[in-house]
Figure 1 (cartoon, one colour):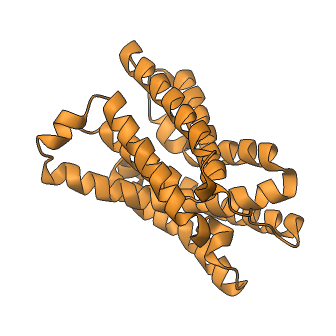
Figure 2 (cartoon, helix red, strand yellow):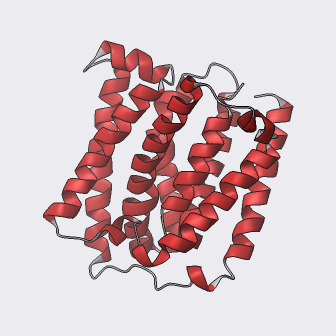
Length: 244
């Protein structure tokens, strides 16, 4: 990662923090938090499901299940990432259905939706401006770039629902907001490990920046009370790296 990208990334994150500090004053985000009657039980279920999907992804990345998917995944292919994200989301959706828990227990809190969408769109717009990509987008995007955006939205929807929604809410209820946020960032880092290890240069820096990014995404979810804000912000942020 060159110094220019690093500076842009850090500037973007500072802008996100500033926007969230201001957004926190809005009454639209002042909604009651989601709670659980048995936090420890919920946390154990969340960690068990994470272990299941991590093993599945590790087997896929190692080529034990499908060599073509493994190669595509290690190369950062969006179709492989979407497939794995969808497979990762499935057990959590099944758990919600079996245990008869509402969508808000996975970060889809209807009362916070309107405010969270606004926060997500503002963060996405801020990212576009800070990356100087507004003119590029207005000049038109190719079908391949549009397809990449759709794939990234799918990836982020699945992964943010799992990590910043289902798991973070439960670990925060069990261990407290601060430790829950930190734990989910570490779990997310473990989930991203195959992609991070595919980078031959600057592994330590990539690990540090990725960990900070996951902490930021968790904080966005905490502040907005909904996963739609980190979904929109993360999808646009990752997509802008793909624009020419």
